[in-house]
Length: 491
Image (tube, rainbow, N blue to C red):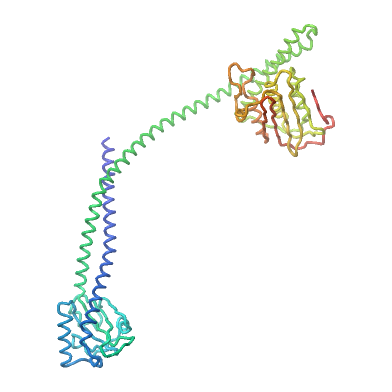
């Protein structure tokens, strides 16, 4: 119990620390994005300020003659004093240069730069094309040697201007270059960035504090549910193990049941065969005028045949269940098979009417399997018909299939019972007082034997009129039509 509590506490703390780290990373990411945006906005504001100073303060001080050459002497002193007074003092401007269209520095707060013609940079060329350009000055360049003493970083802005009296031109007549101390811009950026970090940090911390109880509660709920699921899984494992043991026991019992049924059926076949043989012998040699004795012998023969069919069905079911069924195809006379089926019901020979298609040939199939299929269908038809009702058995070849139909004139099968009549050990009348005998294996064997022979069985029943079973089996012709059985009709 203690270990589970420690593990649960560890999960909660890991969840809390992980959430805090995630919130921190989110804050750092947002801060970095906002810092870049603040830098862009601050540099843009510095550019606007420089542009305002150049156009509104410095440009009005100039005259066209100032751009013809270097400004020196009294004019330089007047212009330098005015620029310092109106543009540089308390404005954050460290230096001002004025360029003419020939690329000459006509004015600079540094007298030594006046009259110089350095190589024109791209920003200066863009300014003469009428575009305001700004950048952080590279103080390592030779032309910026004198600016190194002004500040650690300078922000230079090139502002194109048109002097009064020059008329309207597409290109600038002069460019005013203004240097601002970048530390002032950086100070503004840092101030805004610090404000953003503090506000964002406080917001995320408040959000984390508000969400932490929810997250901890959710974690505890999940832990409890996980414990319940683990306990249920253990219980299900125990139940599954018991269920597997039960299934194994049931399988073993089913195997023992099948083995017992097969052994008992096998042991019953020999005495039943002996009983039936002696009963038929008594029937043949018994007194013809003793009707009571002959009826008793007929009953013995009839019931013994019924018992033999039940025992045979039990043995066949055991073989099918254990996979011991093997078919043996051989040339088979349909007439011989159906005749044997008919003779297998000595007490009902007169009711069984067999009709075979004319000129039906011998076919390749398993005669034992065919005999069992038809015998079970006939037994079912006799069982569910009145004592004098006929049972019709027909056989014909349709394409490459043998079609056998067994029809009775019995009571019929209710539509709701049709889907389960082929189930094992199933009878429509399942009561203990049912009128019909049997164990419910006959139709099940019919379906299984038909399927294992590659065929199919269908049933059509009308209540009060009778039932017809149709068995279709694939066949191959063994020989030409058998002249001995061109047609067989028995009544």
